[in-house]
Length: 189
Image 1 (spheres, helix red, strand yellow):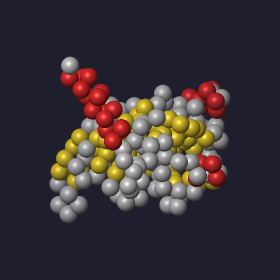
Image 2 (cartoon, one colour; image 1 turned 30 degrees about the vertical axis):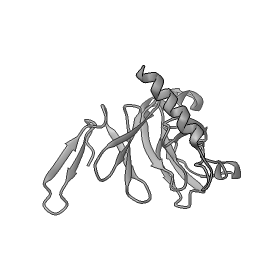
Image 3 (cartoon, one colour; image 1 turned 180 degrees about the horizontal axis):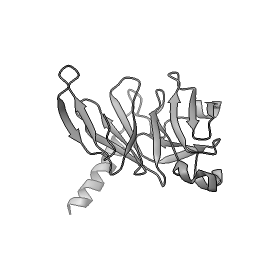
Image 4 (cartoon, rainbow, N blue to C red; image 1 turned 90 degrees about the vertical axis):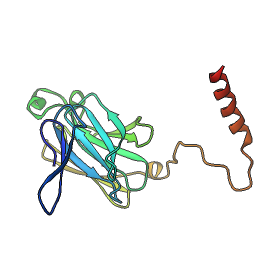
């Protein structure tokens, strides 16, 4: 259960007893979403951040920072990507153009916490996001009254992970280990 003070409370489903309360955010938590395997969850908050947690240990793993309130966040089932939606407060929308209100879906790398893209389309704050389990499309619903279905293009679907690939079996990677050792040796002097 989330509370307006930025806390999450965990309850025993059988007894109703509160087991734990922790404070991941400074302001209201708007949504909590789980990954496909229910091993991670992400919170989205009015404090302009989304935070990724391990479900079992409730360990905070990553923070995704923006310059606007975040109303929803989803974890891609096929890529190491996080999608965030939000924007300027709804009560201020009538006096603001879509571009100024920043109502696009924002894409972040799950591991590196870096924003790498946006998708425009709404002229009000995005309140809800949902990603297809096959990872090929997502839906966004906004204060403007529209639900938009977005299909990823081939270049996104074919995009490779920016992490260097591990050497194939049989390849020797001693040089990179030596370089890492050299760096740590320099730090010890």
